[in-house]
Length: 409
Image (cartoon, rainbow, N blue to C red; front, side):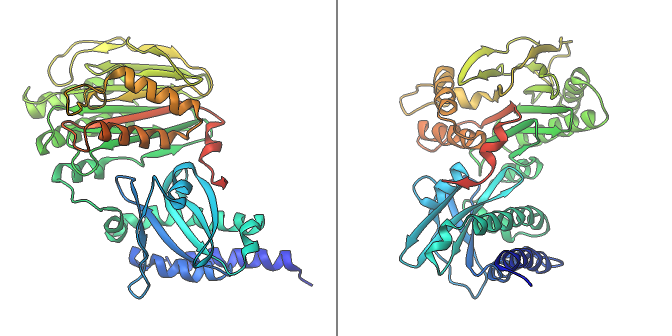
């Protein structure tokens, strides 16, 4: 005989199988229909909301015959709170009991799932909420996969037209947030629809986190091409197993060869040993990284200097720093600190440090800190940036991942 628990487990499995079955050999456009079929096995209905690329709005993704609800603000709604803080939110609205469940791909936030149920008691049913979490997590993986094979998901998330340069840069980026059991990495570029010469990259393994932030001069397609060249040289050298010095010189040679001194780049390249916390890095004409420890910026990592990439061929020493558990290495481009308000005042390093320290002290998850830095920089310049502004945070941690798992509010 089977009991209620067995029936629940069977329904949960059926929901996942249905979602997988209906996303096999279909384009991304079919995703809302697959969600409908899968969530029905759990006795609920749902609407997928995806975060736009500026991460200010949650935009519904619905099928052609479905009612389209209004988009929702990330910073001022219950759905936005679920997205920002990765907390499961519940409420009883005019349309009945609702659950807002974060949609994640690994540890990258993609949106929220609005789940409607008939019985208010289900809002407190922890087994049901756990089934929804599994469903939403699988959905996040499918969103990331299907996004590679068509434009339907991009069309939902792209609420502002992009420049050609921004299109180039976005196609080169890794996931904005990623992690393992030993490290979390999160980055952001502004302005999202017009970024020109900034780019970042990383590669995670069981033993090391390798990363780079690069800033090519200018803010147009020419600078985008230079950034793409620098990034390709970095990846090529890294994937051949070369060390930091060789990676840096590979970037220099590629930019110098292709642009003959007309364009150059700055950057920071680093490698973090995940078993020991040893950080090795080179900073080439770029703002030095910051070290955030227990809620305070305790050091500027100003060693390992090298001249600009693409202009000056000069050897650099690889610098070393020993991290403590949960330390965060902060990389940023000069568009962050040199953002000017209408009165011509720089945002400045002091404001950046103060902002990071306050957010860290409040226990804000790493990707949300990154998002808020981007919003704060835009606010400082009244929404219009004169230069690209990019930030990349690397946290050596075995506990920071807990904040990136959806949980009850």
